[in-house]
Image (tube, rainbow, N blue to C red; front, side, top):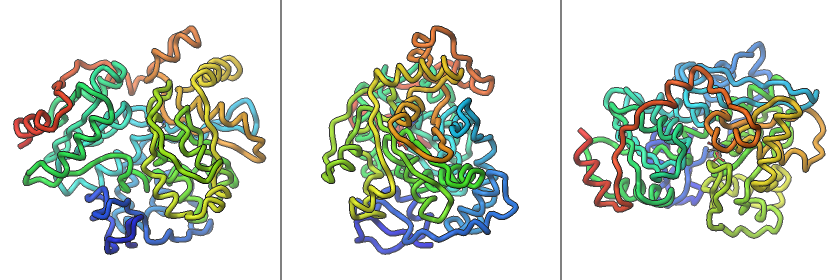
Length: 412
Ligand SMILES: *Cc1c(COP(=O)(O)O)cnc(C)c1O
């Protein structure tokens, strides 16, 4: 399998080069040259998530798919029942840091295991923790996580800055956009003997493995519809690719918070990026989703795209109401992101089984949820240790020279 740029002016390359480069030299994003077709028969007698993943990902990762998938899919991703017979929850939050980003981060760490690198990532909350957990203690790796100082929750900060060892937690006196800009600048400017890897959500090494949980769920309930909380569109792109490969996936609904550039695009046919609006579902606060370029590459005509996905926007008021009503009506505590999907579902009249995709564990967002449901959200035992550690970080001004000095000082 070869990989090409969405902008078409880079020679086809192999998966390793595509992953290590992050972004193609023409400014585009790498995509598979074509998506292989896979038949239901290929999955005959296969029921385990990790085995579904191996079958699905072998065309992309060859013989290394087996060990990569066994290592990544070591936690359950259940499709759980709700009191409504045709509604399900796809629980993506049982990984080491309680968010779906654990899947991509663990897989990427596996792909890179023989290539000691400086791993950099900017985070608005969840990504940093997942990447830090996946690479912490891996010999030869230096992990640098940049996050906006004072703008993430205490528990999220503990997941990023509680490691010490080879994980440098950098609190930037600025916004998430400043963090992202600093990562980009160091990729271009910082000189080191070690390769630089950007572990952001456009990395193919994070997106491709996400196809596996959609495949696994749909094989157990053919025709299953998915409602996906969406920001940068990495999670939903994986679902769309899996459907295109031939998996029995029904309708795909993209659920957005008040950041609705994609909703407007599908409505009007004209794409206009917006400035980011802060919401209760902050991991989805994206005004200009990077992975839209990959969707447009796959479906250049808006009419085609409209046949593949529909989209809805949900405001903070509706998020609050959904958190309250799902807890009251069926005892399910949803994180604010998952609540966006649950609320969006009500706008559609879907036939057949439908999965609300739950992207994070509610205990990561207790300051939002607990006042709404008037009770404590229990932290799963696996997450307790990770969310209550002392912080080991460094604070810098949002300037490249400050980051450069830190890198020079701390990277062997
Ligand atoms: C990152 C994230 C999202 C958005 O996923 P995208 O792949 O960026 O669309 C949704 N929910 C949670 C909890 C997240 O951490």
